[in-house]
Length: 533
Image 1 (cartoon, rainbow, N blue to C red):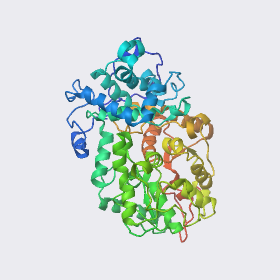
Image 2: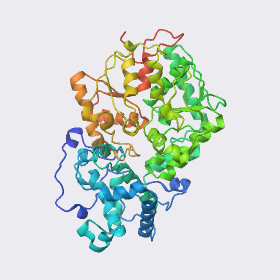
Image 3: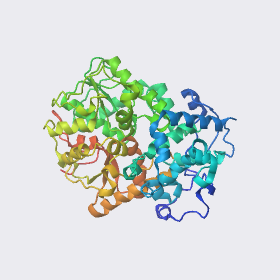
Image 4: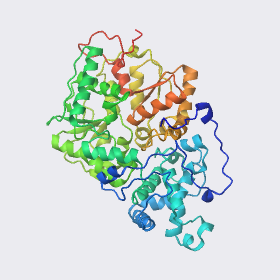
């Protein structure tokens, strides 16, 4: 990254929305430094049993494809068209109305027409028409069909790894076409010939090896959590216990590994630990199911299933009744849209019932897994927590709806209920940038790496401008969110576009305000910053 020339914000904001002079089919892709991700390393493909492990990079002329790469991909497309009804429908349904065209943050941030969802999907549809429709076979380019060539394959790679699968475009599609499903299919087809990115396959390989994306061994997890317990004791005077791998606990708690390993997620993790201690929750964490996230979602359906299986397996081994999941983005899309059919039914678990309030979480009847925002909002709503929002008076907070919990799950009001209960100054961003219409961080779906930095800043620019708006209007200085990837990538985004704003998790805000039994007088927040009481 250090060798790359990073445009300054005032340079990057000068975006040209004029289309190229050549037709899109005749405009070659350019792998410009700063706009693409490194290829999956051979060792990681080997660890996962994936095809064609080799040394290569996307900017190379020769991608070292297998001799029969075209037949492999077309056969893979045929299999998926037969297996997934949604895939065939999405290939046939689009009428190119353009309702999605200006909804993608990468199109807004680059001006590249191939980042319009309608055209990004056309990269795949054109090949579908050529080989799987009679009109395409007969009339070729006249009906929008084209041959599958190496240049087309490179184009797929470039643009399907510029989609964060955030699904904002699907909110505006009158036919309900889900662009994320098309991107997932595009990536699956590329995977068949060994074309993927390291920021996806390395976390997946780590998860197979150690149980989490970061490759942390069990001893490292224990040490890190004990370190956080030390910090909590220093701030509050209260020592929290951290149960690990405890059989017979009522609840298994699963968090994204980013929450217990990297700032600012660690403050969110401290919030979980303080909350569970305060209410006396009978729970355990696991060093085996030590990852809530699932980078399989950015690779293939099969990888989603393989990675997610460990959560149910560990719940069964430990003998818990149900599961709580931490603040994570794509974990919750996997849990709600795939977990029950892929890894379930979880009929060895019980219907989740809060042991503190008695609330039955009917929405989790199938998966037996409750989002921590639902759990905490229920505690607050039933008056089970003592909160002093004045402790957050040094913060002027806005909230970023993380794409997957918000758009994919509909968790919209619970985090807002927690935030309004935990602080006195909360300002919403513009209506067309929040809730179901929330704007992406620009770096989800495995794109949060440093070599892709310019594209991240371009993709995240619309979100940053919405934050800048509430900074100028209301003096906002803190951006809360409910996703481990967001907490990392929004931090870089804010440093680049809106440096006066820092990023936090919702449960960090809650923990600042949480009045714990036996605590000492608090003089700082969890970060050690002085309170303004």
